Length: 160
Image 1 (cartoon, rainbow, N blue to C red):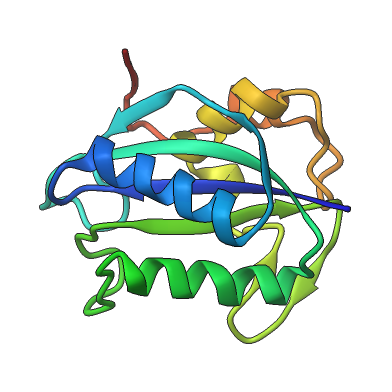
Image 2 (cartoon, rainbow, N blue to C red; image 1 turned 90 degrees about the vertical axis):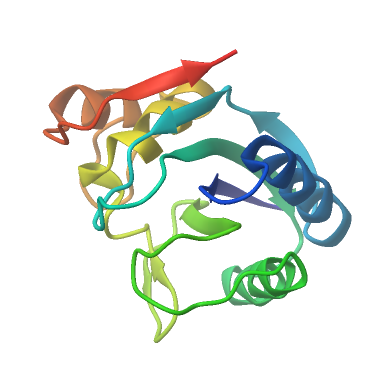
């Protein structure tokens, strides 16, 4: 079995409901949901003139390969109404593979670990909640250590 750490995000519509639907679809189509972080809100990263995002990290146990998982995730995003119009633009749902076991890949549509992970507080903080002790496959540092070192200035606020 493979372990995949995912990050879900939404900044359009009923964001909390969209994250819940993403969890449901991931469980139904990708594997067993073993853990989920609290939900966090943060300002948009990359393109700042848009609504804030809700984000949540998930741990999924799956029989799928990384590429198969990516195909399922893209299908889920499309089923949920995701339209890719502009990079870093607003979106109903976004599902990223942050880590897949300790694999390192550079495919056309999939780079593992996620290349931006060490620079994104909104991804590191929820991931640290469920996997703070695991090591980043490239740096060898724990997720908790990467979070401490992260220079991303955006505030990430837990939503209860």
